[in-house]
Structures are given as C-alpha cells and as structure tokens.
Amino acid sequence: MCDLKAKHYLCFFTLVLSSQSFALDIASVYHEPKILHLQQDQKADIHFTLSNEAKITLKIFDDRDFLIKKITMQGSKGAQKISWDGKDMAGKIVPSEAYHYAIEAKGPAGETAEYDSTDITGGKTVRASNVAWDKDKSVIRYQLPKPARVIIRIGIQNRGPLMQSLLDWSPRDGGFNNEPWDGMDASGVINLASHPKLDISVDAYSLSDNSIIVGSSNSNIQFISNMTWTKEKRIVKQPHKKKMYAHSQQTPETRSDLDIKLVLANTPKEAKDGASVVKGFVPIRLEVSEKDQVRLLDRGFEPIFFLDGIYMHENEMGFLPVTWQWDTRKVKEGEHFITGNIRSYEGNFGSATLKVYVKNK
Image (cartoon, rainbow, N blue to C red; front, top):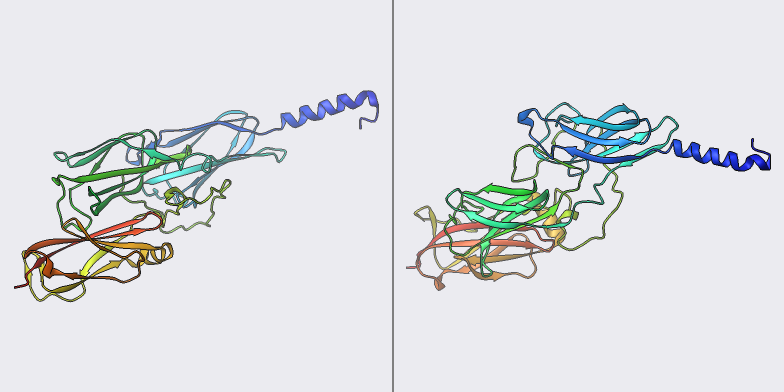
C-alpha cells in the first residue's frame, strides 16, 4: 500500500484514473425509423455509444409498461446498434401501437449504466394545427409538431352534444395526418358529414423520445392479450404530481372514452321508417358497458341529454343506471334524435344517439 507520504498523492491519482477508466456511460441514443412498417419487413435500429465494454440488454415495453421483448448482446467501447423486428418474446408480431425502450449495461467490474427517457420526456400537451374536414375525401386532416397520442372528438358547436370519438389516444407521427371518417355518429344513426355546425376537436400529448410506433394507424389502443413469458414491469423512476384531466397520467386501460348506448326502457309496439314510435312520457335509459362501469363510478360523472342537438336535461351527480323521463307532448310529431352524453370528472366522454318517431295523436 502507499504508506509513504511521498507516494500518497501518486496512489490517490492512480485510484482516480482507475475509477474513471471503469466508469460506464450510455450516450447518444436514438432510433430509426420512428415508425416501423412490418409489412415492409422493416426493423427498428436503436443506436447508442458505450464508454467501455459491457453486456447490453435492450428492453422494450408496451404502453402499460409491461416487458414485451428483451435482447441481450456483448458490446465494446464505442458505437452500438441493436435491431428489433417488431416481435414479442414469443416471436409474434406485436399489435399496432407505440412502444418504448430502455437500455441496461453492465461492465466486467460490475459497474452499471442505464438509459430510459420514458419518465422525463413525453406527456406534454401537443397542439394540433390545420385541422380540417375534407368531406369530398371523407378524411379529417391535421398536423402535429411531434409524435403524440391523439384523440379526435366530433360534436356540434354552441354547446351541442358530443357525437363521436373517432380516434381514442392512438399514437400518430409528427407532421400531416389523415383520419378516415364516414361522417356517422358513434351509434351510426346520423350522418353529420354536411352538418353546418360541425365541431372537430383534436387533442394530443407527446410520446417520449424513446418511443417506436409500430404498424398501421389504429383508432384504438391494442395490447398483447396473452403473455406466455414471465411478466416484468418497468419501474417508474420519476413519478409526476397528479393533475386533473391529465390523460397522460391515466393508465392505458382507463384513459379512453366510454362505450355507452341509449335504449327505450319500455319496448315499443310500433316502428316507422326504422324508428320506434313513441308517445307521452318516454323513459330513455343510458347504459354504460360493463368494462367502463367501475372506473366511471369511481371518478364520478354527469349524464346529459339532447334532443335534435339541443340541450334538454342533465344530472349533476351521475348514478347507474341513468333514466331520463322525456315528455314527448312538448315536441312536434315526426322523426327526432335523442343524444346522450356522459362526461366523467377525469375527462372521459361517451356518446350515443337514438332515433325515434313521435306520434301523440
């Protein structure tokens, strides 16, 4: 050992150099392409540099933070590349969705390094621009400044009802995007394509920098339904303070809009032009899908009813099932459209429309 005073500083300097020589860093991380088109046999290449040789593990997670792929290799000092073919641990092609990755490295002396930008990038509000409805091409056009999760809601202006959630927090690339829409409401009852007061809302939040979008453009998020490997979940390293209406903080299973429908509580005895014939006081029941009931009751909600796009009734405190007693004596005889909306206190919405024919005489 360095027991002489003259050698003390030389020993200390040697130890510092030794510790620095074994320091392990992962830097200059990026991937290409940003969208992986599996039908073109593409692979996603993750590039990075190592400060020293190490065993490398690439981990890929889905939006729930479940591990879906792990690739291990030995890396030397300098530039590295790991390719992912868009398949999971069972060798199956993953659903079209956005995935994020982390890189772990372990050196020969036990030193470690990790890259994971999931918690420190993404989740920020992204404002879409140039939103337009192209009726001739039946597409909604918009532009994003960066890759993001997007929801498109279609309603009627001037505090009218929500009519359709066309896109439900699905990943989209930055730049110009086109979403096909047939012009119909969520229930397929009303064609809104030429409605003079159509209101199209495009909301989005950014994906993290380590996100890879896989496959074609789905309107809803999808997950691997059967994981045959040992489940592993990514550890959140930087939790964020809970915010109201922050969809990026909601779990993928609970951030989506709601699946609801309207039904007549009493079975109609007559139909006309595909619509149930009603008269007098008519109980309209708003039903919520079983999969959405628990989170809706936990978060609280307001049910709202519209007649031909005009506000009619709401409950400040929602409960299930919801029934509205509609007095048809106050409307003209003929065809009418009842729209029910649900608005949860965490910003999740639902819409359904029912066509009826009023005949009080």
